[in-house]
Image 1 (cartoon, rainbow, N blue to C red):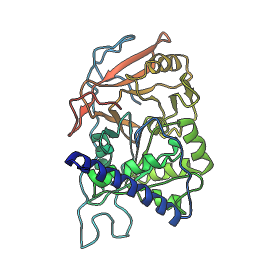
Image 2 (cartoon, rainbow, N blue to C red):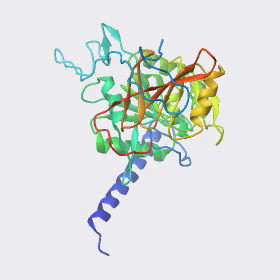
Image 3 (cartoon, one colour):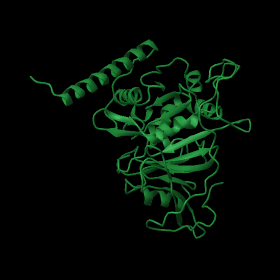
Image 4 (cartoon, one colour):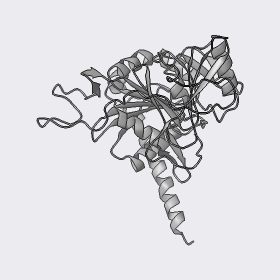
Length: 354
């Protein structure tokens, strides 16, 4: 049988995916845990005082005319420089360097409806939003990224696609993962997470994610990592979890509120604002009746960069999408204000799915 060039490339791609899955299995065995394979998830790996700007006009219904949000200064970016022969990634005390502003550690969250992007041949690729999260860490030439797919029950396929994407697109990144099913694959969870530059939570069931994290004490560890300067990020459930709560399909096709988020950010949050029709009306109703505090929503392909609890800017991996500020107006109705995101380098002009 004659094998064409495209067939050969497909075979090599599938072989690489099989190799990564075998590597993950070996990794889990060698770190004290063996995970059972779960069913397919709905998402790719990595899926599944703020107010309107001065002079902005808030509108109630429909798609209001977007207005540019006034951005706060971005945190310092770029690679740390080696001094005195020490590693560019560590200080004199051997601890990992973190971005600082006026001598204080920069605490950052990138809450998104994006991250990995679909790739027809290999399953996923590292998108501009995930690249931006790594840049925010300013971690030097070998950044460390830990993937958490708790919301998908630690699906091995999701981890395999993530490893394959990083190995192909960002071989400079030292990628790892923390699996909690059926037992943690890493003996020292706290030490491992505090040693990262970026922790990226994937999408799926935010209700299950929060429940499992609570059992393992991850809420306290993730807060400690955030306060130490590790960039926290994620998509969908991995965006909502950092907030007070939001809207979720964790309980079935009918969207419902979730109100027990980690609350690192004192706002509510809703992803997929433009692609799932039920999100917008439910979110506005929950904010209007006080079930959820005022907060932020993101269209697919949009991320919100917070430094501390202040919004620095919205970013996007495609044109024509927005972030949204949703709050309760003086008359008790929800008021929605659009935020125009900055288009990231490498953003596509195509309307890609989130």
